[in-house]
Amino acid sequence: MDSVPLRDWLNEDALVWRFPLFEQAPKTDAPEAWVAAFGAVARDLQCLRYGRAVTLDGLLWELIVNDEYYVIAGWHRPEEYVGDVGGFGIGHGLVMDAPVNEATVWVADIVQNELAGYEFVQWPSEGKHPLLPRLREQRPVWANPHTEDMSLR
Image 1 (tube, helix red, strand yellow):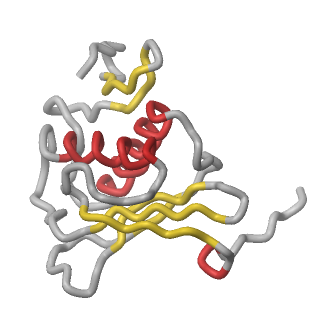
Image 2 (cartoon, rainbow, N blue to C red; image 1 turned 180 degrees about the vertical axis):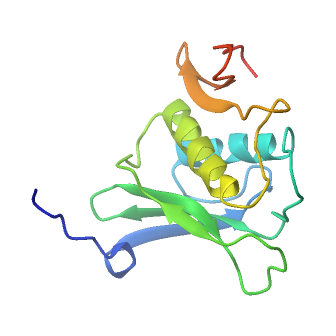
């Protein structure tokens, strides 16, 4: 199997945007679909979180678009942040002009995976089962993987 060299995303020509996690409609020139995806996930972060408390206030959304228009998304942890969550950034081949619904499901998935790395944090959850981000009728939904319930939430 051929190995693929890792790219140094931050040393390339890239556009970087950062804005508060819970700010309503931030003033930014970032791609609208990604801003909307971050906003949808931020709204959902405020409910159905179970487990120990984690401090998200003070984190910033971070969107990086490289010179080939691929996206890295995640959280930036500013120096003044006093919470217990670290920053992260993940890219999985989505492009800057991805449809808002695909971007929303993808952002929800990476945030859910990031929070799962903190002991006893489940988001979002209906008690014992974390819900999974999915597209249904081209709309982002939270689905119960045990019942296949994909009602719009």
